Image 1 (cartoon, rainbow over the protein chains, first blue to last red):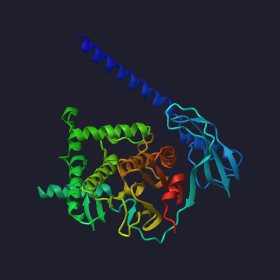
Image 2: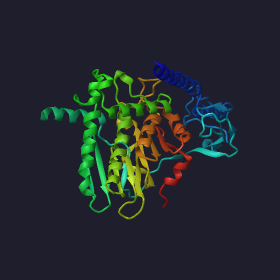
Image 3: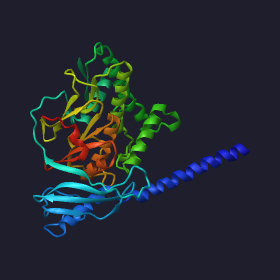
Image 4: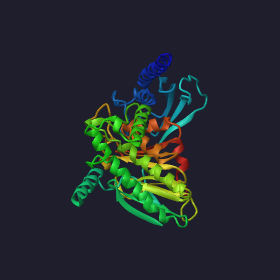
Length: 156
Length: 246
């Protein structure tokens, strides 16, 4: 009888723990590093031309004033995120971390280092020889799968 | 020695430099066929089709349960953007491909083969070096022109996965707008410590649209290169170290 109570107790603790963890994920998962980036680009456009709206996606047809802009501090999945955006020639050229989360889940440390987060470029054809290519094949997944299964039925 | 077979609806290519590696190729292709038999939603007799028709969990294979656990983990870490249960049907194919390639690479290593790549539909796991004794040269296809390469990478142990709208993959969608197609992002290439990680994160990040590359940047151990519909590439800081220097 005692063993059963113990097992139920342990299972109960696990269930409660996983429920709490799930709740935490939901709470902190609501605001992410992605919104930190869009907040930063949002403040860059507020003084200049057409706003990209509240959708939060930046389009490459929008132009920005040259300079470096600090975004708001946002609560991301693993901690705080604050980014700075550098605009040059009217385009975003770098996005830099001012604050970034550590690997540990509950860290609130502010890292002193500025680390460039993303860069941009126009795509350009290369003349290089390669061993193998990554990218979608021309065969449509669904078509080929369907064909394969039809052939399989034809065999049986 | 190089060989290609059409399995799981796509060309699967194996190349190995090591002597006597070719005799193990058929084992690898057979493995991919068995994966297809179990996980293809297009095959009526597959285990996944039976599950979608109501096969109870107690009757699932151990491997299937493990795959579902991995899918659930990927869903958690991607905040729901990786979700195999949309459109009312369970379809783990967004995880299976990278997972299966990774397992196949493991089999190669068990055979003592060190220098190889396995390419399944453009998702690639490499090991060691190519015939010239150098890290493998992996090209990224131009999503606007399938005959062109727009980036050349050097990798020797990593996995390289590319998600793209030109695939029409059923497993990629935005859980907040399930009926919209993803079209801001034309392709997203992810480099990870292995093809399992690269592929599942490429799938999840692709569903996030333009924010997906930020998710890749924020996830340790991954680098990404995203091409949007305006032919602009956005890439993570560490991605540059993989680019082939001329």
